[in-house]
Amino acid sequence: MKRNAESGAAARVATLLDDATVRIAATLGLEKREARLEARVLATHAWNVAPAWLIAHDTDTPDPSARTRFETLLARRLAGEPVAYLSGRREFYGRTFEVGPAVLIPRPETERLVELTLERLPPGAPLSVLDLGTGSGCIAITLALERPLARVTAVDRSSAALAVARRNADILNATVEFLDSDWFAALAGRRFDLIVANPPYVASGDPHLNQGDLRFEPASALAAGSDGLADLRTLAAAAPAHLLPGGWLLLEHGWNQAGAVRSLLHAAGFADPATWRDLAGQPRISGGMLSENFTPDSGGSQPISGKSA
Ligand SMILES: C[S@@+](CC[C@H](N)C(=O)[O-])C[C@H]1O[C@@H](n2cnc3c(N)ncnc32)[C@H](O)[C@@H]1O
Image (cartoon, rainbow, N blue to C red):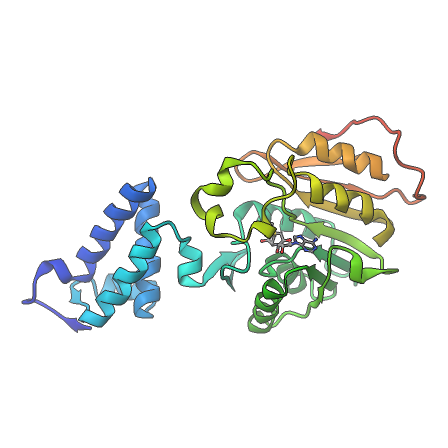
């Protein structure tokens, strides 16, 4: 690209970004601030430049091929494709993860799940952790990097997702054991100090599946039966057989599923399940500790006394 004075204001970087911002905001119904951020992400990706370059070079005129690359990405965004899939990356817990259509785009509420997990993993203890449904690997890799002494295992049923997770672990230099597994199927006889999961929890008929980013994300990462609880049911019931005494299970779920998930945890033998709110104030994570003297038939009849924090 060359610094320009003569070839027309319409082609300058600043003008292209302004135009794209207006079109993204109008077409996708985004706030102008968010639309501008997206326009900048698309431009940095199209031109392979750092964000600061866009400011320093705002009067440059992109050459025709650079402009075409930007406009192609913009057209795909205007058609609804998630900006994270177009740029191929998403920030999570301060690190950049590669993402693509094989994996769920990591969400900010899942960072809260990671925080709650880290609170239960003292830095000096070599505890074992299992991440169920790892997708991009964002939870498992973050835990492995934040707690280098922990032994982190991660499973997914999607081999395409596992390929993305393994690549992220390589790029970020994290040690994680990845397994191709239908939930606990490949983990017979293994027990962990903590199990964490952000499983599919959207009801299969939920109209949100046909809106926004969700239209482009793998259905196998989102939908879980007619009430959205199918996988949460499976995980709550099966987790005790894979937890050490006193071990924790932490589950992300939908904003209206906290009571149901606490019931499932009680029924499975977790003594006093609790629910935590995400950064937006929604009750989105529930979990419990397996009692030290848990036996398979000691759960089931306890009253629901869960609390929200
Ligand atoms: C909601 S996504 C979560 C991805 C990632 N952990 C995150 O938080 O961004 C759920 C993940 O569970 C995986 N999954 C769905 N059913 C599964 C099953 N039966 N066994 C293992 N993984 C499964 C999906 O492939 C998907 O990667």
